[in-house]
Image (cartoon, rainbow, N blue to C red; front, top):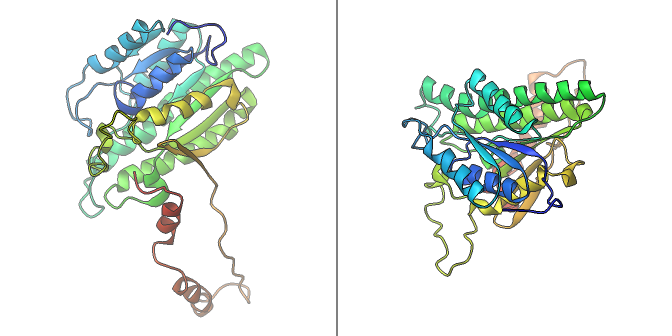
Amino acid sequence: MSHPLSLPLDGLSAIVTGAGRGLGRAEALELARLGASVVVNDYGRAGRDGSGEASAAPAQEVVEEIRAAGGRAVAHLGDVSDHEQARSLVELAVDTYGKLDILVNNAGILRDRMIFSMTEDEWDSVIRVHLKGHFNTTHFAAVHWRARSKESGGPVYGRIVNTSSEAFLAGSAGQPNYAAAKGGIVGLTTSTALALAKYGVTANAICPRARTRMTEDVFAGFQEPEDGRLDPLAPEHVSPLVGYLASPAAAGVNGQLLVVHGGMVAIAERPKVAAKFDSSKEAFTFDELDELLSPYYADRPPNETFAAAEVLGLKRG
C-alpha cells in the first residue's frame, strides 16, 4: 500500500466504525488503499447481536493488514454507542494524525424479532448501537470540523458516510428495531448535511447489500461463485463507493442516499407526493375523506412501496 502523492485520499485521515469484519473491514482497507490513514474501530464482540465478549483481535488484525500493505492505521476498541467512548475515538484520530477528515459509520448489531414478540431491550439495544452510535461519532466529528473552520476562517475538509439499509426503504417484517434505526440514520444524515455544508463538510448515506456476519441468514440461499469470480454479494462491491464519497471528487454530493451492491449504484430520490386532495369546505369530514381516499387506495396494488423497490432490484437486505 506504499503509494504516490496522487492517490485520492493522500494526506487525509479517516475513522471507520465496526471495521473489524465485513463491510467495515472492506471500507477501511479501501480507504487505506486510496491513501488515507485509518482509525479502525471495532468493539470486537462475537455474534451479530453484540452479546459476546469484547476482543481487540478483529480491529488489530485489520490494522496489521493495512500496515503490512504499507498503509497507516491504529485500532480503537471502544463502543460507539457510549458517548464518551465515541469522544475518545475522534480524539484518537486527531491526536494520531493531527486532524480528522473522514468518518464512516458502519457499526451495528441485529436482534431480530416480530413487533409483537420484541422486548424493550431488543428494541433499545439496536437503536442505541445503530442510531445513537451514528449520532455520537457524528457529534464529536462535527465539533472538530466546526472548531477548525472557525479557526481557519473558512471551509475545511470533512466527509461523513453513514450506513442505512434497504430494510428502511422496503420494510422488513422481522426487524422493526433495525428498520427504524436505519430510517433514523437517513434523517440524521440529511440534517447533518444541511448543518455542516457551510463548514465544507458533506454527509451522505448508503444502503449496502453484502454477505456479512449480520446478513448470513438473509443471503443463505445465494451461494458464492465456485469459479473464482467475485461474489456479487461481496463487501468489496460496496467499499469503492465509500472511497468515492470520502474523496475530494464527491465535493458536490451532499445529503444523498445511495443503494449499492454487486456492481450497481442507485440514487434514491426523496419521497414525492403521489396524490393531493383538497377539502371542499373549511375542513375535511369523515365522509369526504372516505369518498376521496378509499377509491384511491382501492385502485392501487397492495404493498406498492415494496413492489416499487423490487422493480429497482432493491429487495430486502
